[in-house]
Image (spheres, one colour):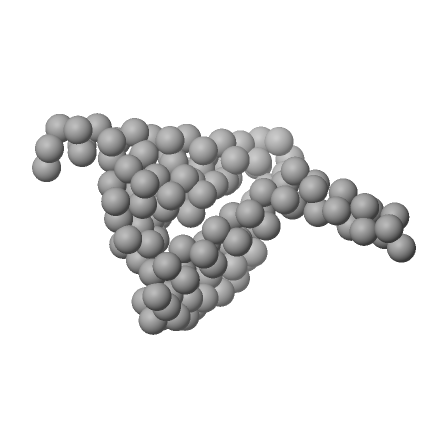
Length: 138
C-alpha cells in the first residue's frame, strides 16, 4: 500500500471517527463518499468497507463513553433499548446489504444521494420552509 493511500485512509478514518463520536455520523455520511471520491471505490465497495469499520471494537469504545457520560448527566442509556435496536439493526443490515448488492452501482449511488439530500433538508429545516411556501401558494 502506497504512503499516500495510507495517509488518505487514515484521514478518512479519523474524520469519520471524530464526527461519529461528536454527532453520531461518520460511516455513511463521511466514509462512503470519501472512499468513493478519494479512493475511487465503487458504491458497493465503499458501503461494505464502511460497515466493516463499524464492527464491535469501534462501536463499543464510543458507546462506552456515551454510556458513562449520560449516566453522570442523569440521562442514562437504556441497555434494553440498545439491545432491541441492535437486533433490528442486525436483521435490517443483512436484508439491506442483500438488496444493495443486487442494485446497479449507479442507481445505488443515486439512492444514497437522495437519502443524504433528504437528511440535509431535514437537518437545516428546509423541509418546513418548503411546506410553508407551498401552503402560502394555495
